[in-house]
Length: 255
Image 1 (tube, rainbow, N blue to C red):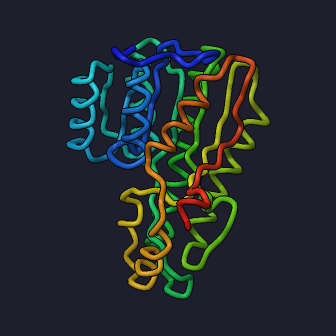
Image 2: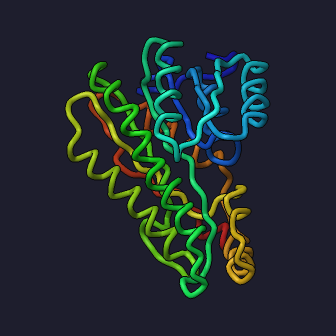
């Protein structure tokens, strides 16, 4: 554990090996930093390897343990290599945080097939590729934890976000199905953030949707708030499974 950090009473603070996709910015990067500060070993993956190198350097300077790997979640082989590399390095994988996501919003009438397919490929297939890679490892170990970063969009739909919300509902449904199918030793958590201060809105190319999102995102929580929710979920005792956490701006923040 990094100097100055104090274990939380009643939590399992053993040094877990945590894999995080989409870790080059936003929630993924914040989660890596937060967990490393708590003594966990983090293995971060994304396509932007320059960002990952900066993140790993920051963690190591602070005394934490981190490794980085190039990962494209739309490529099943790439995700499988990510998991294999982490297991080879540390001998096990304890937590897989499926965080990679994109949000190129547009009205359905815009017919943005490229944007729709990108959201399906990253937000849904990317999650499935992660599960296909990590579940056999968890089965062998008879223990493991899948954390899916969904969205408040999994619970409510807003204009221009129909397809995005559909992908996040799919992520929620897949995770809930996995939870119901889970054998002993497997935990499943879905974290559904509300508006978060991140680069996600930068993937919106439709002008009207971008303008609407600027107003919608005028009140946001920090990525660190979501990272703290992940840390809470993965440090519970073995007999406690935090199935879902919704994290969003409070009424005070909106006032």
